[in-house]
Image 1 (spheres, rainbow, N blue to C red):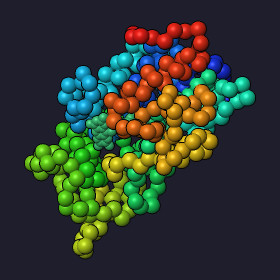
Image 2 (cartoon, helix red, strand yellow; image 1 turned 90 degrees about the vertical axis):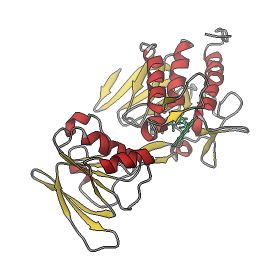
Image 3 (spheres, helix red, strand yellow; image 1 turned 180 degrees about the horizontal axis):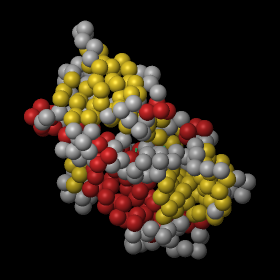
Image 4 (cartoon, protein in one colour; image 1 turned 135 degrees about the vertical axis):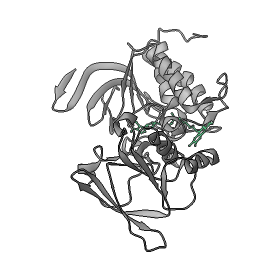
Amino acid sequence: MSDTGNVTVEDELTDVVVIGGGPIGMFTAFYSAMRNLDVQLIDSLPQLGGQVAALYPEKPIHDIAGFVSGTGAELIANLQRQIDSFGDRIGVHVNEEVQGLERLDDGTFVLTTKQRSVHTRSVIVAIGSGAFAPRPLAIDYDRDGLDGSKVFYFVKRLADFAGKNVVVAGGGDAAIDWALELEKIAGHVTLVHRRDNFRALESSVAQLRESSVEILTPYKFVDVVNEDAGLRIDLAQVKGDAQPSLHVDALLVNYGFTSDNHLLRDWGLPVKRGDLQVNEYLETEVPGIYGVGDAVNYPGKVKLISAGFGEVPRAVNHLSEELYPDRKQPLHS
Ligand SMILES: Cc1cc2nc3c(=O)[nH]c(=O)nc-3n(C[C@H](O)[C@H](O)[C@H](O)COP(=O)(O)OP(=O)(O)OC[C@H]3O[C@@H](n4cnc5c(N)ncnc54)[C@H](O)[C@@H]3O)c2cc1C
């Protein structure tokens, strides 16, 4: 491995890079390691788990064989445990978006993120509907100066908000869940939403209304300005005249996520209606590049977790046979 500026160049040739650490990418990394392949797993979000971790960690999941009424977070924790059991074979890199994918003359690939470049013999694309990014506040504010210090789109450590005066923006499950979590440790929590109604579980909304969280609806954001001691947040009442300013320590924005998979085309891969086209082995028309999970389509495709899990052994066993023809196909583990 060598360092050129801030970019780490991995000199070693790995067997497979899995792009995307959603549930299907996580299982792909684990299953590949079980087949004695060396794996690098890369995800653009700060945590693994894809849609499940980012959008519905608390939702029960009922339609996965042998997983009885667990939540999304429990499913991801189980997958993480499987990955950890092969820690020496699996390199995990979060907060890194794969931007470049280049096929070399010898049939190997170089993948690049802003932080590293990885040399691999094969690639499994598990990017779902594409790289996730939190939907930003729809106003012009000093993102470079404030994001990560006073304006947040993720909670990395709840304890960082202890005793603080916090505004939570949004009206969905995530906004309400965070407002209720913050209420336990923050000095004061205000929830600001541009509608009177919330798009969240009735039980959570009821809990919110009984909590000490101050609810400001329907208000929209007009400006967010740095102040020595904190933030000034200027609001405007929707269909009203009120224009209050709040002086707080931090703003946590929960406007959901956007996704974008234009990179598939940039990488020269076959895409139809936004989906990667694969054959019965989940291989694209580019030898050595496979796709699994929500990212792909083929006749009979079902975009569910259990269906994506089922694709993984098909892809990995075929890939393993291509890379190591002398290795036998497994009957079972
Ligand atoms: C509200 C909701 C409820 C659902 N409930 C169920 C359910 O009960 N049962 C069920 O089976 N399914 C359910 N689904 C569908 C299920 O979540 C998806 O089928 C599943 O998440 C697909 O997994 P995946 O790993 O293919 O993709 P994703 O979960 O979308 O993960 C893809 C990952 O790839 C990363 N990524 C993308 N591009 C890049 C890049 N260029 N570089 C690095 N990383 C990248 C993304 O950040 C993301 O983490 C639900 C979906 C939603 C939205």
